[in-house]
Amino acid sequence: MFCWKKAEKLVDIYYETSSSEDLTEILLYFQSYLKKCANNALSKSNNSGIWINFEDFYSNFYYRLWESIEDFRIIDTSTLKNVIIRRIQYAEIETIRLYKKSYKNNNMTETSYVATQWIDLSQFEICDKNRIDDDNSLFLKQSLQELKKISIEQHDIVLLLLLGYSGKEISLMLFSENNYCNSSRKKIQRAKDKFKKLLWDKR
Image (tube, rainbow, N blue to C red):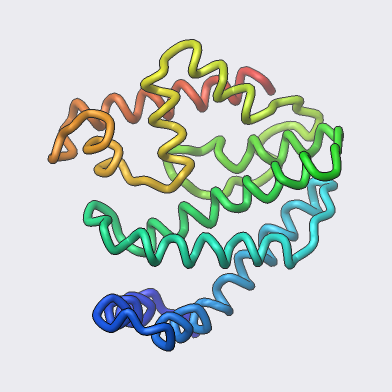
């Protein structure tokens, strides 16, 4: 059974040894977790009328896992679990967008699916597709562009959130603040609220 504490211990060992064998052990340990994530993504996409191979989700999740492990060496403002979960969520969105580009699928249920993944930015959880109508014509990219026209800062905040960075990391990168203070929290929350409103306005 997958356990985050054990995963963290394996990663700590890998950081000490930098051994390819230890990295392989981590990746093998995560296989069951990644398969579960890929199956969940596959189920949601199929229910939305989008047919994507399991391997497409799984390979993207696998890459994001490796990327998260390597990047976490220099991240000290978030947990390994949060970094991996957020980046896998982003990889799910990325897979849908690559699918659209490759197959030029104009089905509006695709945009509905993409929108629902980030409609609840305050929790960073995958939302149920029934939260919005199936005929919703929202494009995530268009909403980001609209947000950029309103506020470049808020646009940058949301992009970093989608890439899996924590509030503390964003505070340091954008506001040059070592502490995650109330001012930074309010700026990040306003950006999430604004983006959420843009998503819902396009329902």
